[in-house]
Amino acid sequence: MKPKLTLRLCTPDHVETVEGTDMVVMRAITGDMGIMPGHEPHGAVLAHTSKVRTVLNGETQTCHQVFGGIAQVKDNVVTVMASHMETMGPAGEGP
Image 1 (cartoon, rainbow, N blue to C red):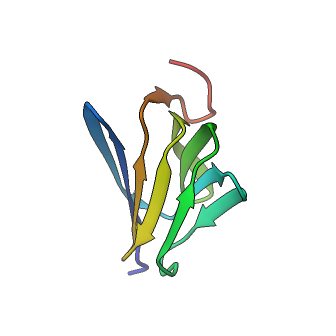
Image 2 (spheres, one colour):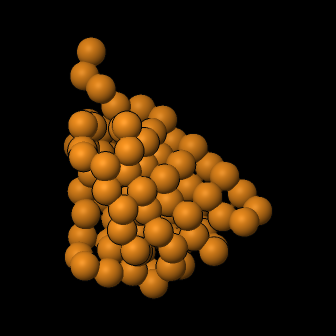
């Protein structure tokens, strides 16, 4: 079976986990990032308002708006730490 990613979204008062995704897409201050299973360990500073999307079978699975923060990629786990986060619909529309 093909390996999958786990996304952990952490704020001071909430942790949300999305398991079994093919790709995580987000915007860092240096540009857009697409993380797939097997990605080398990496860290990034996220853009002030960045949408963090998970993709499964070519379709957006989840979308979260994060306000600043950092991301870490290690061992097929993408951890995003931000001061605030809003869950959006798969197409990126608001709650």
